[in-house]
Length: 327
Ligand code: AQP
Image (cartoon, rainbow, N blue to C red; front, side):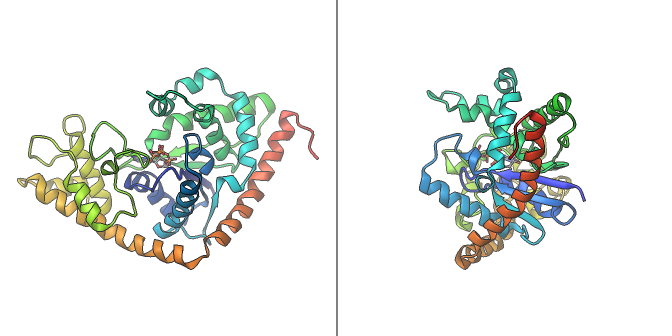
């Protein structure tokens, strides 16, 4: 069986961007692949986090994974920080990464822009991400297309390590969705939807109440036209809403264009909101049940044990190749 690995940061509540670009694929892939999914809490601390909030968001994200359909009997779900091999291999990968490679990363440029003090963790984040992936000999990494550059670096580092120290790591491939690999902010069609956006109107969280979802869509930016057609260059906002609608309704974009021919934005946005609410309501009910069950901690501990067994073996192999004296 091929192996799949991916992660999401607990840097806020999961958005429909993360759902469409990432978790929706995880849920499908767990049936076919040996799957490892994690909450990457060590990545979240590359920007300042309040400890209590981080803890809550980490548990909440793990519960959201389950509520969306990740089955702990099928996939291994765990917290990155509970598998210390990530930190060790992360450091080893950092020593193989060139400054120039990290300086080119657009995510670093975006997240550091205009900030006075920038932690070095934000800069070396892609080296840790490479370690996350390589530890599991992952064949496929399902991600949104904002991660293309990081994944390319992971492949370069795997090849670099293999070239220098002998065949050690599997060189992974990215796995992207056809529709919705990059969902944009509801308020700015040129900006990616992000869970850490300071304006909550820019994103729909998976845990937003139905009325909040309706309000956010009704306030979403559109354009001064009235045609509901997919045209990313000239109508980025409407195109983004069409992508979201397509994923949540199961209809193709063509079908939706036809359905809304000659209609204005008002009805379109209203019905889009209902399609999203319909999918998210049952997820929210399951989420509340999981949080109330008190079983999350035990399940995550079991996940970390399973993940450690794989990660520790890879780490040992890599340490040995690199010249460490093993106990
Ligand atoms: N807008 C998006 N559209 C499609 N996919 C997306 N992803 C993120 N945003 C979108 C995918 O979700 C996965 C988890 O992302 P992450 O939490 O590791 O970090 P991120 O890419 O930086 O996501 P956010 O929501 O923007 O988080 P913050 O605000 O903390 O930076 C990844 O597979 C990502 O591609």
